[in-house]
Length: 163
Image (cartoon, rainbow, N blue to C red; front, side, top):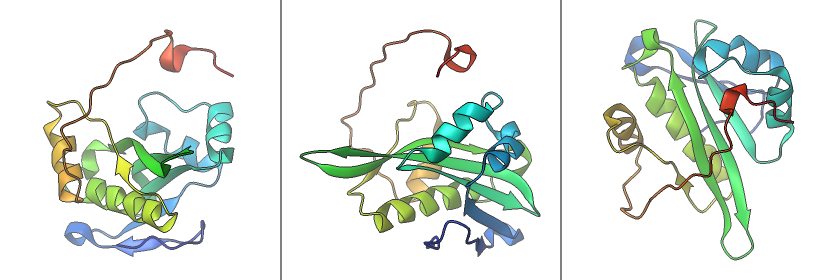
């Protein structure tokens, strides 16, 4: 599936007989309208910063005009490696799960990363998250067996008052 290059274009596909539109979020209002899909309600100022940041992308899947899922990605550029895309988060609302939407969102982000010239896309997944692993594998990802994640936690997360 190829996502159109223009940011306001809509891509239609038909997973399991439902018409789904996947399109890039371009306004804060779109992100806020999809707020039920996030771990916590999106904040206007953070949504604006995300959308304004070069290399940040958030694709929303709509079913009958209702936000049903999203995937976000962040491009990372390094002087000796070029640009890669991190699939930061994938979410599909409960009533729309197991209909191919997560896989379609993932493939759309991978296609977009390829079009942008990224050399790969990667995602960190908890080893016991079978649903996520199945979704990513169905979209063509493979386990490279080399990933460990270490974290410096500063507290707060969605509760923090970040700039």
